[in-house]
Amino acid sequence: MVPVSVPSDAPPDAPLDAPSGARSEASTPERTRARPLSREERRDAIAAATIPLLVQHGAAVTTRQIADAAGVAEGTLFRAFADKDEILHAAVVRSLDPAPAVAAIGTLPDDDGLRPLVVSIVEFLLEAQRVGMRIFAAAHQVLDPHRATADRAEAVRRMRAGDGRGARRAGFDARERSAREIVAAIESKLAAHRAQLRVDPALAARALFSLVFGNALPHLSGGDRLDAVQLADLILGGIGADVTTDPSP
Image 1 (spheres, rainbow, N blue to C red):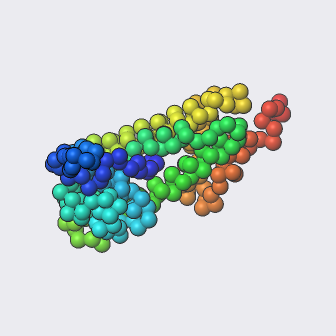
Image 2 (image 1 turned 60 degrees about the horizontal axis):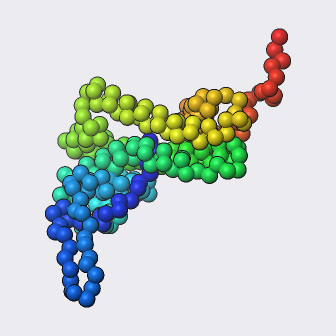
């Protein structure tokens, strides 16, 4: 979904079993080291650091680039993950977490009225689409059919996070849950401008989300996608010449 990585507050290269810091000299203040990261925290930090690299480099990103971005030694990657495919899978899964997108929508300025707010929301969603498409393009590169059969089979298993209908259902549920949380965040922003809305904020949020994401689908947009201002004007004005009157008999 909306891949927004949030940097960890802990130093990325803190060893899993690092001892606590000690006083160096009586004349200097005590310096304590950050709490060591657990293996799961380490995996999450590495996955988060990998997301922007997937956007920039796709599946061609190297483990050296990932290690540099995460601030860890390259060997640390392979104490947390089996191989590069597993890192990329974790990054794709991490990018589906809606929490960063929900937080980002909540910080969008809304003091200038409804239209500037809607434009800002649409711009954010369009950028989220761009990032998401790059990430999932990288995921498909990992599943390149020209790879060795055994490698591809293992990559498919990992990227799907399981086998069969249950795994597909879990993936669908995760995307649906992510969409619901983002729509709810949009609704919260629009609710402050309820007096300027012709419909309930919940309906307005669903319509905005659906139109923006439908605009990204080539078979719906015909390849001629609308920009943020065009989408905002369409959302706010509708398609009728005058939405306040109904000339039909």
